[in-house]
Length: 296
Image (tube, rainbow, N blue to C red; front, side, top):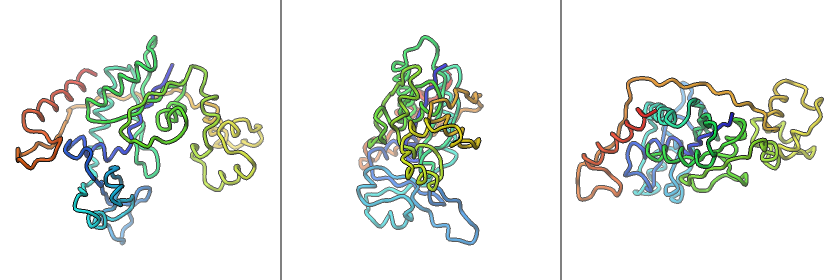
């Protein structure tokens, strides 16, 4: 069985622009109650901080962890919107529903990356289906839902995620909205992962530094370590990841009811933002999204 990873970068930001298409291309900062990677604590200030931002907002000086007030003060061009947990959950459901029209098994996966900024979902590649063509179909499905995604296809989950998130050359994508499909050849996971940096594994900085001081800097070098070096179960699991043997098991998603689709409708002012939708266009877009989900 082949696995496809659907990597949705800057998920909170994409959920905001999915809800309000007029925000696309604008300077947008998505704020929430806690800084990425940290949990809120009672008795401390709960000033909203930036969880995600668009490239336009970044160019104006917005940075992750910055308070909402500081972001607003940088420029009047910056739109500050609050992260919507309900909208994000519904977006995950929407993706899963749509994927079921292309794949028999869908796994909703989870958030990945620094501060859990991105979303990684998985699905089974149907038999006798060419990987690149299937990946293009998935990109098209998510585009219909108002989302941009990158697709990685491989024999196992970890390799598929690396292919989706870091591409064929192993470097992070610079354009969060660039849709790419990378299909790793059958049986080629170990070779594909070998030159990738050790930092792709969720090991502690201390352990990574120790390994690098011993000359172990890539997944291939880590995978080739003798068994006594990775005797503990957790380390052995990491070595299996580095060899491209993370497995292809999927937690099957079951559709739920009811389906919900929201969108911001323009009031029709001559000053409305580019990309905003009037009543008829908004209704048509929501209808297409619902039809796409029902098809799954």
